[in-house]
Length: 119
Length: 233
Image (cartoon, each protein chain N blue to C red):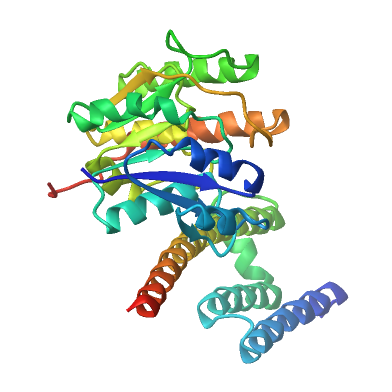
């Protein structure tokens, strides 16, 4: 085992533990944690066996295996970022609706209170 | 016919009294939608006898108008007008935008500054309006000369549509496409407006490039959507 292998193995195991810790602290939902856990398992696999990457790269005609890693990594992050934008849009939509609902309900409550006072 | 005047207001304590006074001759209810103001806008409006709905935080002009339209929808109003809280719109012009909706000849009426009888606008705004004018003609087949005008009258169907679908930021132009796409009749009438009493436009020069891009994208995408109102009368 060379030094790079140990370092990258340590890093990916570290990330795996960090994600589990975040879930344990209820700071990360399981739904999103799953994505990052799978990612770190994937990275651990690649670190352990360099063969996987080499075979995959040659199979699709990439002669320098690490560039496949970059390609896949960048594409993956891109998709995750788009996914987060979608989530963010949905959240701001519901936030917006809730704010309006609260405003309208508060008005109704005030009106009812006033009516009660009179009656 | 029950009519609601919706006044979107964000920190308009200095203007709101004059605006409500200006609507004295308006025969209908007045609703001030307070968009998370940090000043006395809501209290002043209440003391003048207007209904007030207050957002818990700032939502922007689109969300504010939409809250008013939701209120109108929930309370069964037949028509609603949008009358800005900054004093630009004139109470004596309201009858002009009401007329066609009242007669059942239009679903959305836009009070226009550029048709004969309107006022002169700044050069940046003029160019922007021209671009939007062309886009609306391409996408919706309608000639609207002052698409950014917020002086509007909504009919019952439009109230229902917009209470569900209305954009947060810079909604004016896009909403024309939304209405046209749903088969509503959008009509523009000339009105007179004032320069603003105090405060300044929400669209600064720096923001105007973003504004143009965002609104253009929203319009083009909106034109690709199908009808929103299905199976309701």
